[in-house]
Length: 312
Image (cartoon, rainbow, N blue to C red; front, side, top):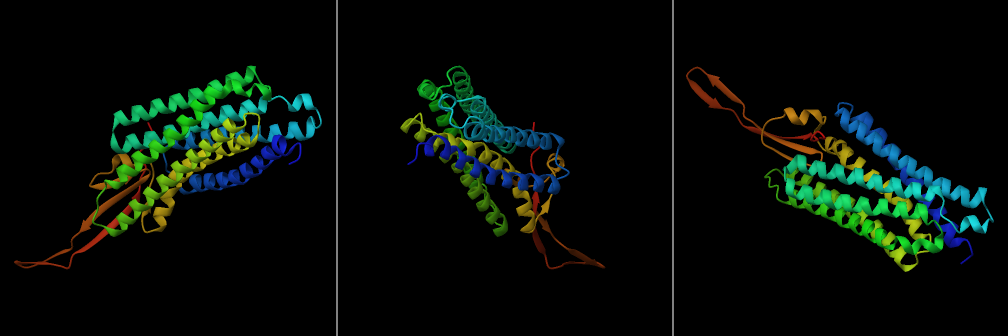
């Protein structure tokens, strides 16, 4: 391995992967704003804010690589310190995690009204963000690579609680879906697909966070963990957009896409989960002739209306 493979090569590869993920973010963002124009303004602003924060984070990734490899190439004194782009992407990654996790907890509360679980999850989010904030503050003051050991405790708190929170959110969503019983095969298929989506999105972010922690603990002066940290924010934003755009997939499978606002005025028995609202309707056709009342063949249909509880 060359002299610069770890300190520079790893973060360069991290920006390559981040760039590819950001292209997916752009595509999913365009899909959201073009497909769900009638969503509540609050949701649209929230999505724009989250994407903007992640864009700033990606800019920090690029700036760090540029300063190390172009502006200060060969300057060993500069390369031995972590400059402002480093703390910038750490700070914005923490904010991105805070926003997306809060969004998912908000959705869970809108579905179940289980305030006890939501309060516990919110406390986990606060502790996780506190760890990220402490990491940024300490690195701002002690920015040398050989001083990275000083952030060991806040890094462990941040990444451990991030992983735990992501897994817990996925578990409560999966449990809620598992307990939704229906006799409609199409609805059952939709619920199973949502369970898989909750498992995939929750496990992906938690695995990345744990990988960053393991890389840091194995060698706190290595930039391998830094490269992994570059992509964490992108994955969180993709999780947010996937949970919103999954309604478009449901529409293609035979449903009707509706807005966030429509959910509040809807009435009737339904199965709702994480951006999907499945309305079950039984339609009976009756025909009357004279004094006789004949019952025509009954037809039953299952409508899949994509509904999202409005954010509060």
